[in-house]
Length: 112
Length: 113
Image (cartoon, rainbow over all chains, first blue to last red; front, side, top):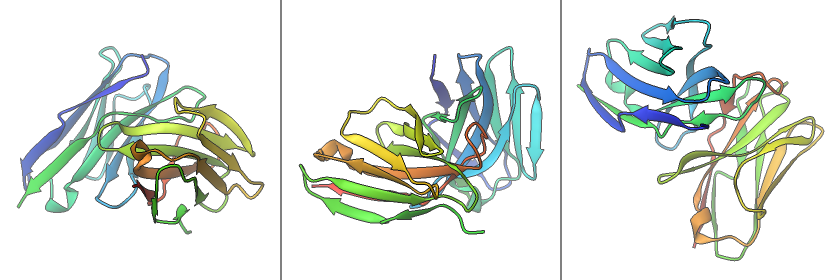
């Protein structure tokens, strides 16, 4: 019940295309859902986050879509660029807690 | 504002040794969490601290321990190192406990030979 399942494991998208990464969870006590971006040799960087009372949040080219009834959320990267090539992690946090429960990660490659 | 800093960045140890890793949170942040990242297991929670108190601990053996100082800096220690402890150890800081925005440092790459 503490797991977050992420798919796909790897994704190749052409420059200018839309990258979509999906996550699913079971525990309805999760109430914060961040996405992190990690480049090789670096720590994860907080990209965008959402709470379950909102169905969508957009920041620049990055959008989180949240489906509370399906217990799923996804990251959409519009107009994907080669610089977006990185590993992306979704995560979830229980209400009142701090611990991040991470998905397994998606290695995104944007072909020029 | 400086980000989360971790020292050392790289470390090579042999089995049976012990190691101490250090984390300085973002100025003003009082909560620190530690994570282990490996290719096989992904990102796994180790422990979290706030006000010098361990608030939660992950499913790791007792060889893994940590502490937080009054200036919010944190250290983690791994005793009797095993080959499987080779990993990237990441520290994340947040303003207060339960403030979900957490910012990671660059990590310490530990290699156990």
